[in-house]
Image (tube, rainbow, N blue to C red; front, side):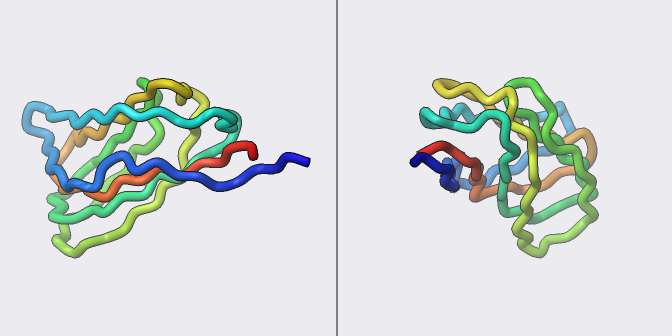
Length: 117
């Protein structure tokens, strides 16, 4: 009898800084494994640091999944956001980080999701 299990993909371990001057985008390509349950929500986690009054936006395959304001702080924070992954593709997907105001440094980005066994 099959069931579901939690799985994850490490998007990046390296930190990157984005700011609204430009505006600057940071893209990462990834793929989800077979038996990915695309009707489920997922959790995106990341470290956030050196925030300068940022309005952070995260898109997956052109669909906005996170839009959040973060006040100025240089304390490391682990952020978890529940997001829809209806648009994720098994072979190739793209996640895009951008800020429309301020700047921030992001790292250790992990995408958690469910898949069938």
